[in-house]
Image (cartoon, rainbow, N blue to C red):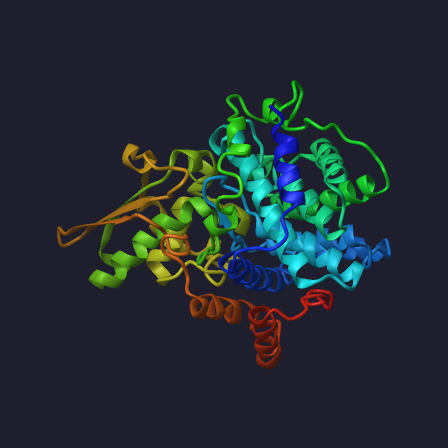
Length: 440
């Protein structure tokens, strides 16, 4: 079997897309732009911008993609492919917009097919390494698997042949990196991961365009990616039902500004607050069930998760997310702040949060990400909520209107209302998307 070649040849030949895929691409583009524009104002984005200015490299597509991807991942609200547990848009749109600005004239059909192809490649590779097992080795799939998607997206925008794209994927395999060690101290390196994947994917495609050759079996080969990055890879995931549907249609968006594994439990807590109208001081304890794959990300080590010191640590702390949602009735960017990290109110609520496993939640994971929360009140009531599909999932999506509301809320501190409306109209109507982020 040659899974790499089969995948690449299909994606290289991908041109016209079904209308629902085109609409979904536009939908996810607007979501990406919202998080990228707001994320560009985060503290972690400034050093990247300054470094690029120092190098006088602002107009080079790889560096533009690095800047876009890092900004778009800074607030933890970018999209997530469920079965691959991977953030796709932050890599693929960063790649596509940076190259579009550099090439200047890219037909919208090519832009859309390039992005959808990148989503397809990275999602399938992430599923093939099995997210839980990939995480257990200390890897972040957005970076390790994302670089292959970026190479595919870049190759299509550069109009490379299938053989050139195959080399680009092979080259990208030597750029597949992304460590989870940031979790140990709330470092910023995770925010850099999609930017690096986008930058490296562009570089791989540009090298392939000039005739540089990469290995043709980078995924399934003896020393290939699947064997090096997973203890039990599933190579059949690379080509299973290829072309019958598109993984971009199975991608979720985030309503909350934190790790994807915290979204469902937060939904359950917020639903209980809305449905029963109790006050925070009435809560004796909160029990939330977290998916096994998310355990090392948002639950352990316990001492750190119950005592976050930075926004990054809070974004990956289930106790903090649960406490903030209960206290403030929301878990957005305005709740995940340094001020709230050190809030006495939050600190007093976190010890009441009990995090458990629940084998029932694992039955359909990773295709579905269910959640459960239970709250015990001082008046003796025990309230429980099961969430089959967290808000933003394909099974429980944000409508276009809800997505537009998310976009407007995020960009309000950065853009005028008129400029915000222009971007929304441009995305929905399918106008040229070049230069949207160039000004940031």
